Length: 119
Image (tube, rainbow, N blue to C red):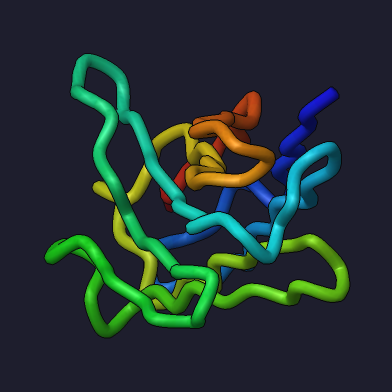
């Protein structure tokens, strides 16, 4: 079955850095767009960054210039390098895989990893 497993969430001070990882199994990783979303308490889930199967990237306005998404198709893993972290980056971060393969549309989510930015 499909599994997306996030890791790397932690407590970090403002201005610090973290790298999140999402390891995928049960999907055709090279066929999907990989996305990172986040959801802060009391707020809607928002897209943070996306990377297509061809490596094209897109970022939410609030993280442009601070976060970098990348993927390693050989390892079925997507990364989110976060730097210059701010308290408002505090949220649960979710990995999402979306795309066509096997003749159908797939939209799969991980369980999330907590990132807390606080002094």
